[in-house]
Length: 93
Image (cartoon, rainbow, N blue to C red; front, side):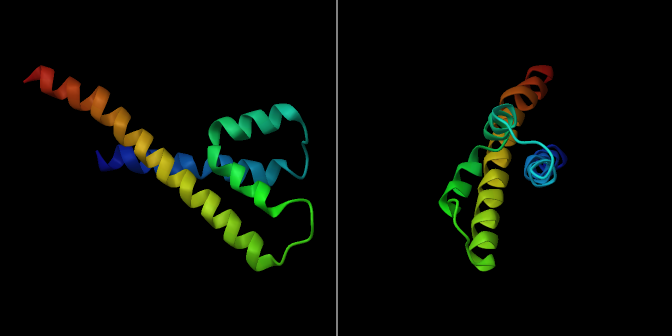
């Protein structure tokens, strides 16, 4: 189970990393929809607004957004494991 959960935790870091890298090259509503789909906690980034913010505020908001994403993916991974894999192993007994 722990390997399964760790895979979900690692997956939760993919979207923020892709967002950081792609924000320099691609801008558009399609990218925004993909980001909101796979990184729902990115909505926290709206609190930064369009103004200049101190770097400490930016780091704080990004760390909260990524942390909430990790928690969401961990919960989703645990639920999927319980529903599909736990049931499967119990039916084999």
